[in-house]
Amino acid sequence: MGNRAKNCYFVVAMNINEIETSLNNPDFQYRLKAIAALKDYSPEIAVPLLTSKLHDPEFLVRSFVSMGFGKQQTAESFAALLQIMKFDDTPNVRAEAANSLSLFGKCAASHLVLTFLQDDHWLVRRSILAALMDLQEHSELLEVCLEALASKDIVIQEASVQALGTLAQTTQRQAALSEILALVGSESPRIRRQVAYALKRFDEPQVKEVLSQLRQDPHHQVVAAALEDLL
Image (cartoon, rainbow, N blue to C red):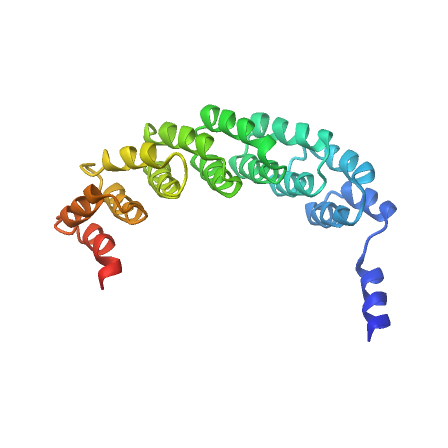
């Protein structure tokens, strides 16, 4: 059984010549398979080949390239991801690059913040918010949340309120709570709903008063969010 499994693996795996050939195949499906196969190779081999496809005309290929760089962590792949985040014209690719950059750890945080400030596409910003939460970079997360709250994009505003709630057990607790409480009177029921969820992470006396207020909200989804743990 073990030998058969090993043999099967070698049949499926691509050697480097096959990868190089497939990377130049007009059918982008071949290029995707080749990029995925590079995970089995060292950075010395994989990173130059990934770099050769930075400007592939198919955005899915560039997304795979971004993922590949996250698995091949070198100074060159870090720099390539920064380039993708700044210059690629497809939000999905930029978002994937942000995800991959976060895999490098805390050294990525300042670059993610800068990208958040410069790129206002909701998908990229959602990816960065999630990445900073995973990295537990609390001051940087607070910074981007404040920027997100000033956005006109309701999706990003909602994500920001959610992220602020995750700061309840950090040194940014009071700053986050202050921002959340300031949104209790938001005209958007979607924001008030997220406020109700976020406030449940805090136990200050004023929070209980505000949640009681939100249980009387004219919008049923806000009421449901405020009541959820009581039911």
